Length: 482
Image 1 (cartoon, one colour):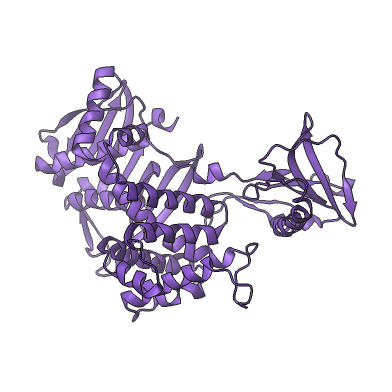
Image 2 (image 1 turned 90 degrees about the horizontal axis):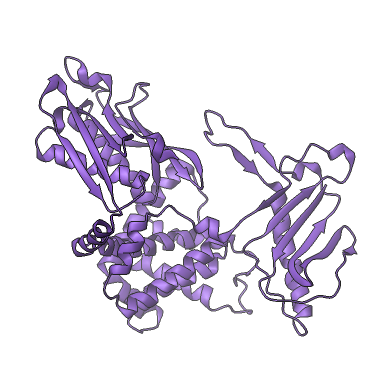
């Protein structure tokens, strides 16, 4: 099999001719358009067919199909080879290669390999990695914010660079940029490990989100068993003080920022996986700070009112009618809502569901409300309803005397595809009634949003323990799915 690793050229390089240059089992060739180099490629011949991409079908243990790319090991060696190549050439011509976006190509070298390569090309894109679902109202409201402090502008610029670096696999750059956010925002121009550690110890928001990140990573370690990082040992020690935890993050910044050739522990820019977990951890801490500020601005009542007025005056709005249903045919609410958007998105459905639940609670009918059904433009928008157990004599369902939990199974939209997710949450009560059923639905919404506020939920079902019948279900209509 022939494996080719290709990298885009970001700068303008003219070339009169180009043909493959072979050295043993390795070849260099350039892809050009109209005399301009577009891609620099390195091919490896004689690669075993076991390195071809593999497709793993869905199963009960793995609800989503997986793609295995063992040929990805050639990317690292290609980067090193091309960096040496760049070094020799740089005196005459700079090739600005986009190492963040490699492309892998696979081709049969002989007839016996025909039909054994299910995927012939695979590429990653930084833009795709950073892409997340975002409703336009957030974009519009952000523009209506009057002024933003210059320190916040500068510090969040470091956070953006950190996110881009992390998505590209440049974990050292990511960690340094996340730390620059903290340094710019909270260290007041002061340097020195001890001074910065003391200053960060005095920031309530930083301490809050640092502790939340520690809890999250500990939960993740229980569920997914990720590898540990020697650089975060002090952070996760149960008896470690806040000062010691922060000091270890500060010292790691110093280690990554000062690259000494004399040090046997210096980091290799071509081997950054060692710092993936520290970068992800600090990115979670900093990201929560940035997100909390962003949500505070976007959901400011004054900003929301301005955006709503602009939407209403321009006729750019969506009207929703939500009908509620109660046990024993008691009087019900019919809620008319207007939202400043023209698209019936999953985020719109989620917001309307939450608002309706709050309104039912305010009207003291949530404890016997069994169904919410909404429509927009004459079509079903979403439905949320408790299970058949709500119509029994006890109007409740019982679990075990102790140690009960709920399983939340949900589907969500991502990059045009519907994916499946699942998680478990422990609960204190052993009996679930209608009111606690709606509370559990809100808890699951919160759990998902806390991990990714842009998640577009399509369906959601909650089960008690290993019961097969759901306690409550939620689903959006076909117009939303499209």
